[in-house]
Length: 409
Image 1: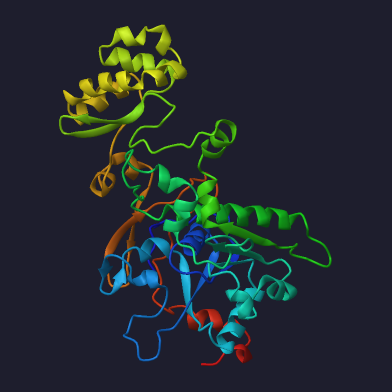
Image 2 (image 1 turned 90 degrees about the vertical axis):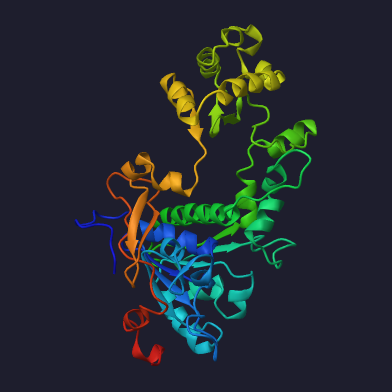
């Protein structure tokens, strides 16, 4: 086990909460990772390798995604840190029976299978909650557990399209582009974590003699709904005015100025859309005429003349380096930022000061830097206490706590 802490870890917010993670890849496991970061015991159920398959082919497919070190993705050290790995074949009755026994002792189960899969295996919520009425089940799927699309396979890329995000991404008149990461999965996972925490709070209020742990419930998260929930004014503007919001490149339509601007050696993003901020920005770039223009004193007037404003800002930034632009605008409290790549993040002192870059050492001695804990809690902070587990690393330990008749060696 590898830990980023040499001193004792303070009490954690979710200590004592047991989670069984049945999901794979991104959405379900990201939710499990977040709960594990704050002290929940997360037991990840992974499938064995298929008979005759190559060594290392079993488990969550994420183990083999993107860049590998000695056969295992370094991404694994982010997504599965703080978790335990137990190998069970849920395609067999024996595997499902062991999983049911583990779930009987759990507070939360996470799954992101196609709707109906758990029911087919005799592991739907109605069955599991009979023996564990306090169970909270987080179900993440493309389209949710109900509705005409519920049985369709759903990936983040499709959810981002259906949720309205993909249409807005890109330059006007060109094919929409995707974000370089699976935002639909991550947004769904975070909504799922919120749902689990709400359900835990509700469970506290339902404790009774008949339900000593309180009553659990299902948290139903659809990927497309998690994306849609973040689309701000998209729907009300269509509903009220028939306006279909269009892609606008790096600008933010209806809010001015907010854009990316070229410098002599790169680009910056500037958010000068607050009324007082706009005045400071214009004065800083030597455009006192625009700073004092009454038509530009509020956002509606600036939106009408956004092309003129962007041209003025761009002319100023083009003549300066990124560092010079940052220095001038930070001095007058105008929001401005460099467009970071991975190297910029890794070398940024603020990331380090906030402990947003933390080391994890893998089982074969490679030190990998991974994103730190979000959010920051003052009394019960999260922590990385363990590297991502080897496939089945904790099977014997976890199953030894069950009745011997429930599993076989």
